[in-house]
Amino acid sequence: MTGKGISGKARRFMSGSFYEKLNTLTRLFYRLKAACFYRFMFGSCGKRVTIEKAVLISNPQFIHIGNNVSIRKGVRLEAIVLDPSNPPEIHIGDNVGIEQNVHIVCMGKIVIHENVSIAAGSSLLCGTHPFFDVDSPTKIGDRLSGLGSIIEIGANSLVGVSCVIQMNVKIGRHVVIGAGSVLKRSVPDYSVAEGNPAAVVMRYDKEKKCWDIVKKQ
Image (cartoon, rainbow, N blue to C red; front, side):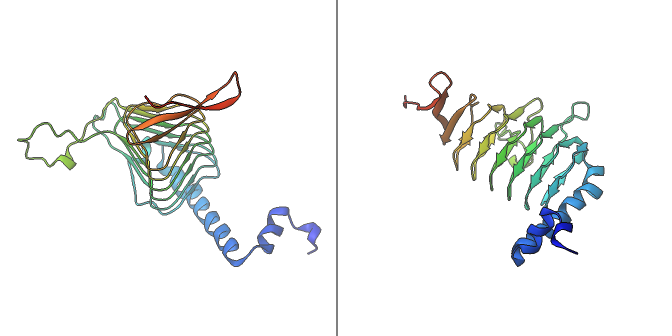
């Protein structure tokens, strides 16, 4: 077969290094697994979805995944049912990338809009462990609440490495969350937030078409 009969993707594959070829084949394997297996488990599952070795996927019927989604190994996707009449919802939009060892736990509703990137080791915790009853025989780790809670991440946003997003936090569009941040409050559109607890440190000014540094209070 001549070079003219080989597609651009095939030529790139043939010319790549051993590790590039191995990565491509591995990705194709997990994409095929999602198409043949996971799409029957989830509430809905789009095209070109890649899910590597997950640590845990619970109640996948309440999880909805869009097109061209990449989920790396070590992910935990936990939809926890507190009330069967009001089940949890996890919605992952198109073109979302979720890196290694991300923990997504939902007792209410989590919405990750399109083109969002979530870096390795981050956690979305849409629920809590009540601890006020000091006489309860149930250990705190087994106490669960969060019915009606929500986490939302707007389109085109980036969540940095090892961030924690707590329940009832809404992140706007085109937001960058710095590495290691803990979000306890919502973040507006077109901004940068970082720290523990996270605070907005930059905002985009549409009139001036530039990013402004937010002065600390």
